[in-house]
Image 1 (cartoon, rainbow, N blue to C red):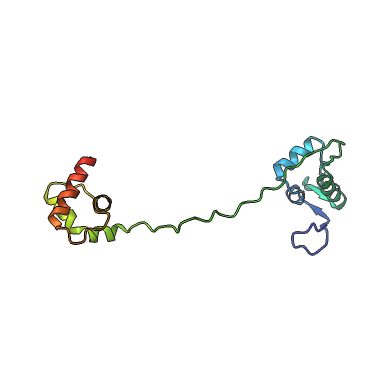
Image 2 (cartoon, rainbow, N blue to C red):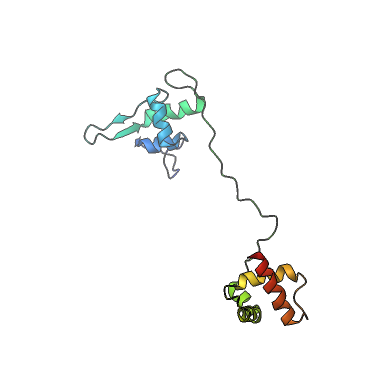
Length: 160
């Protein structure tokens, strides 16, 4: 059992509570809950610094408790398996890039100008692009520009 973080094969002489929890595959908080419940042995404390630590022999005991699902208090403990994060879902369709507002503004500048001439000064390029998309699904093509402006004007008035 490798207990060092660099996987060199050597056990550390002592590990912190956080490291011991990681060796057991638990969060520090859950590990400490199980220490208080008597499942895992409590840590030893350094006399000078008062820091808790687990020496090699207690590390082995904790890892064995996790492996066998039986605490030092003799009670059976069921540990949840570690959660494996699922890979990101693969989209079924390629993501469509949103239309650039500048491209819409340039593409429909004449229509926007015509709408402003009719008193619709709050119309945006996005609204015009959406209206044109609904009214003319096959593209504007050779449709008379005045007819397009009229249709978009009426469409936007109905929406508002």
